Amino acid sequence: GQRHAVLDTNVRRVFARAVTGVQYPPNATTAAERKLARALLPENEGTASHWAAASMELGALICTAKNEACHRCPIAAQCAWRLAGKPAHDGPPRRGQTYAGTDRQVRGKLLAVLRESVEGPVPQSVLDRVWDEPVQRARALDGLVADGLVEPLPGGLYRLPLT
Figure (tube, helix red, strand yellow):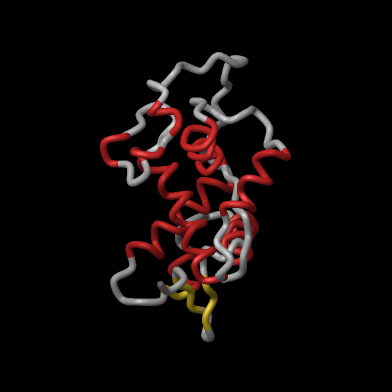
């Protein structure tokens, strides 16, 4: 995988809580967030792609927007927001982004198929069944490959990057 600083909604929330000590990130991505993402990104390409995947998973499964599971969090002992007593958001009201039908949803479905595969690399034909809209599905898969979160293999196969 290549080194790419990933700043999706989940990663931004993890950084906001763990590093800056606030419950939610700003509504729009800031230069400070991009700088932080680049600073935290490991130098090694392989490690960087795992870091990107792990930080997205942390935000999606543990450090969620509404029901954070700090007791399961591997960085809870260093989390600035938790250590500050989980202060409530005091910024502008939060508008929840619609998830259904977004590229985020498609990316999540593709990653789930790859993560749950017990037979190794996944053929393109299996990924094609994940989402009916081929242009959006291809865009989501291309984005995952570009972000270093999915590795394309010869023969139309895909897998998560190896550790």
